[in-house]
Figure 1 (cartoon, helix red, strand yellow):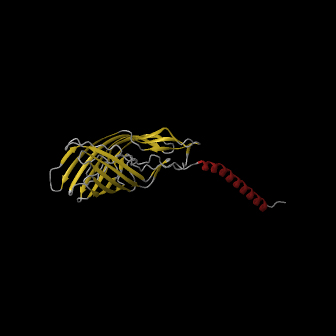
Figure 2 (tube, one colour):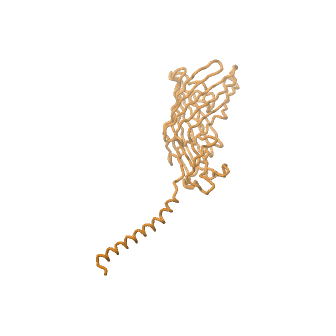
Figure 3 (cartoon, one colour):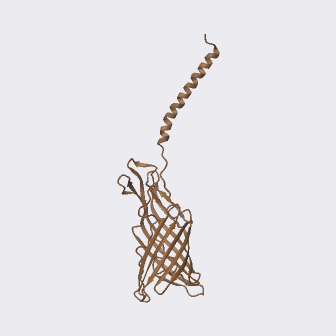
Length: 322
C-alpha cells in the first residue's frame, strides 16, 4: 500500500535523477568544446621598424657615431629623410625542417620617414643630443592575429620614440679618438591610424662605444661602433624581439679640404637578431607547422640629410646638404 507522502518522495527522487542526468549530458558536450578552444598566438606590435639611426651631433659619417663631440656652446640641427620597403614581413616556418617557407603577409610594405636630431656642446668633452623620428607615411596590411593573414589596409602617420643621448669624448691623440654614449628613449610614439610598429610603449636604454681613426694626411677617416639596446622583450608569433647587440662601421675619404664622401655600409643595426629566439607556439596552423616567423630587415633605402649649425655667440646659421 502506497501513501500520498511516499508517492511524493518517489516523484521528487525521480526528478532529481533526471536533473543530474541532464546536467551530465550538457557537460559532456560543453567540456570537450571548451578544451578545443586555444589561447590566441602572441602578437605584441610595440616594436619599431625604423632601422636607420642618424648620428647625433658632430658627424664624420652618416649613421656611425664618431669619436668627437659638438663644439662648446654650439647647437646643431640635422634632418634626415629616408624611404624604405618591406621592413616587416611574416613568413611561414616549418618546425619539421627548421626552415623558413614562403611569405605569409607583408605587414609593412613601405615607409617614408624622417629624423630630426639636435645636439649642444656642453664643453670640450661632453655633448647632449636628442632625436625624434617622424613617420610621414607607413603603408601595408593589418594582420588578423589568429590567422596571421592580411586584413584591412595599414596606413599610419605620426611620431616615433624620442631619444635623449649623452655623449662624452673619453680619449684622443693625433690619429685616434674614443667616445661613449648613453641614451634613453621615451615612449612618445603616436600615430594617426594606430601606434603599431612606430615604437615601444616603455622606455628603452642604449649604450654605445665609438672609435675613430684619421690618416696622417687627413685624407681618409674611419670609425666603428659597438653597443647594446636594453628593452622589454616582445613576442610576435614565433619571434622574440629582446635585448640586442648593435654594431656599425664607416669610412669617409676626403677628395679635398672642402669635399668629403661618407660611406657607412654596415651601420644599420637590426632590431631583431639574425637568428631570432624561437618560443613554444601556443597554436598551430597544421600539426607540423607552428606560427610563422617575423623579420624586420629593410631591402631598399634612400636618404637625404641636411644640417644647420647655430652658435650661442650669435653667428649666422649655416645650412648645407651633404
